[in-house]
Image (cartoon, rainbow, N blue to C red; front, side, top):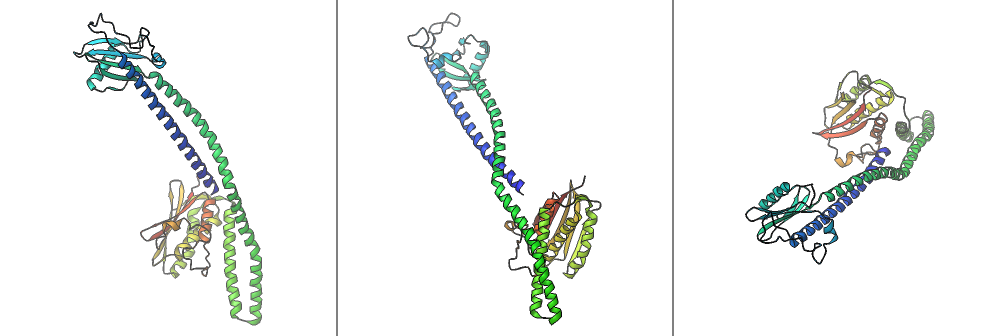
Length: 413
């Protein structure tokens, strides 16, 4: 139980940390990408606005003016523009290529830039990104200028940053996992200690109470022999027997929870069949029929005493809580790698909010009942403890006026 609680705490802590880390990184990367994209667009817009082409020149003998702010002009270009790589294609209104500038870099040749520029002109999109190139198109009057800014370096830098972030983020998550485990142990430790002390108290109190109950019972028998039948002695004996039944159930629960029983190879089919036979007469006395469907040679690694007790608890519980029913059915079968024992009876549907408490100690759906039937709300708690000891699971399902308890225990390989 506490292992499951620790796992949930670790999962919760890591989930919160991962969400915070992932969210923070996404916001940082998104903000950085938007900022760099806007900055590139601004640089490209300035470059396009400043660029002019000399009038009266043919494509072969023309010479393009340098952008305003070039070394031949009185003012210099901004440092970021100096460090950026620009390409341009100037196309006349008659679709004649007037100028192609590859920036003396072989990454893109003239034909590639011209083809890309014509596609952009046809699309009519004034700005955007194509093939790692941020572009901007502007009508200069006699011609259309398409300028490109190489965005490869920025994308590679962002990719490198993401890779390093993933590496260091993974290492951080491993460290956070161990930190979460440490915190979970610290959180659960007081609860685990308290639970252990509580179970030990139940065991010790049960053993200590057996002696005075036995003494009271012996004295009642001696007095009844001397004075004969007496109403008051009968009341004492009745309540003493109830107390003894409660003590024995508490000791059964303590043994199931605190001790590791001796395990051996058990033919569960034969065991369940043998435990079912005595209850057929009990079911008949209650106006019911106990039907069983038990598959043969289902073997598990377990303790025969506890598995018999588990079977009898489930059958007894089904018979006692069968309302206006005609039968109680028991099924034992193989399902994948588990032996599945299910006991079904007719009864009112158990509300979902109450099902989670069915296996708690002393929990009773009918609060008006106080143990006159020698049942104290410990049977299902004992069944769950036995199932847990055998590394299995127990659950309850309600459908179509049926209540079904299902126990799954791993098969012996």
